[in-house]
Amino acid sequence: MIVPVILAGGAGTRLWPLSRQLHPKQVLPITGQATMIQETLGRLEGLDGLAPPIVICNESHRFMIAEQLREKGIQPGAIILEPVGKNTAPAIAVAALQASRQDQDPILLVLPADHHIGRPDRFRRGVAEGQTLAEAGRLVTFGIVPTRPETGYGYIKQGAPLTSVSAENRACAIEAFVEKPDRTTAEGYLASGAYLWNSGMFLFPSSVLLAEMKRLVPEMVSACEKALSAGRVDLDFFRLERAAFEACPADSIDYAVMEKTALGAMLPLDAEWSDLGSWEALWEAGAKDADANVARGDTLLHDVTRSVVHAGHRLVAAVGVDQHIIVETADAVFVCPRARAQDVKHLVTRLKQQQRPETERHRKVYRPWGTVDSIVSSERFQVKRLIVRPEARISRQQHNHRAEHWIVVKGTALVQRGEEEFTLREDASTYIPIGMPHRLTNPGKIPLEIIEVRTGSYLEEDDIARFEDDYGR
Image (cartoon, rainbow, N blue to C red; front, side, top):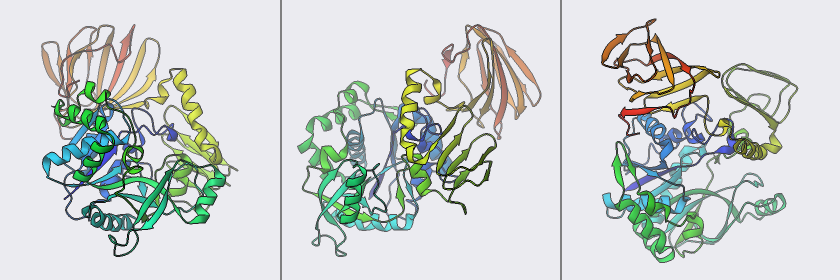
């Protein structure tokens, strides 16, 4: 049995302003209509013997991740919440321990949630070949056949062929993992033919992986066992125990296990792979028009070539631009030469230093019950657009510094205001005074759309007292 393990804990700030800390790239539709995590799960279709996936994510992303799975009609084996990020090795150890509770010795197929694979058929063939290696007791990683001297990826140097395991003579031992090289070194790697890109995708027999981790990083396994044993179920999620997981050493699976084990194996994979870790990588992987532009949204281009142009909320028009990145969102516009796309990190650092919200969240914020879009914000009032999913409801709550006016523009609202309960239909409105307990429910089968006008002396989100909440917040 193969258990997919989806690593969905990253923030992806190199794709700012599209990807942000509280709304990362794995829950965004970067290359198509589906989000990155949905594409990751979708390319598993056609593989035999798959168990429900285990998803590892940051607790602040939990409701968005659950919604992605719900939209795909996928019932996960578990959604495990990390209280803090500890890199890939602890996450994989937790998944192996969890999977071993359900099956004596499953094979783990470890996949980051935010990769792009243009040839999923080749990916599936690689997994099938890797399964043979894993069943023979090997810890398998997939090395991507390089197409250019890339300086943004780590590399793996191929060792001797593993002819005793692979009849096709494609698998090889792992001679060395190497860090991201400079341009000259990367060109040498490409010319030698001995180096493949490090994909971060793995196939492990759970028992073999855990035995190697107990030998190489016993304190890590011990901390993960404690965090799992003392964890608890919370709605559709499993929360690792915070203190035990915080005590766990942080490390990547490459450093913790793969560089040290004698059981490693690498399979070459030529499947049009990209980790979409930068705007340049998105240009490389994206579908291009006749002028080699990757354009998305409402764009109007004249004499624009070899560029990425992303329009999220309004028309983006450009003239006479070559090899540039132009990205528009509701609250930010980013422009830079493609060759300097990695330097977006300097902007993100400065925005964090200035404590600007644009690094953390978009104007539209996702809630477990729907979305909140901040349309207008001023000192004494705010206007927001609320979308409440069918049969969902906000918490029963009150505010000490603001009043709220609700206007229904689509759907039907069931309103609790103090001891009252009543229904509002389209074009109807109500007023929630300061300090009044209230709740909003969508009893219908279509999304409920509300325009909310906040007024008062303090309008921030932390002015809230919850009395009842379906989502355990």
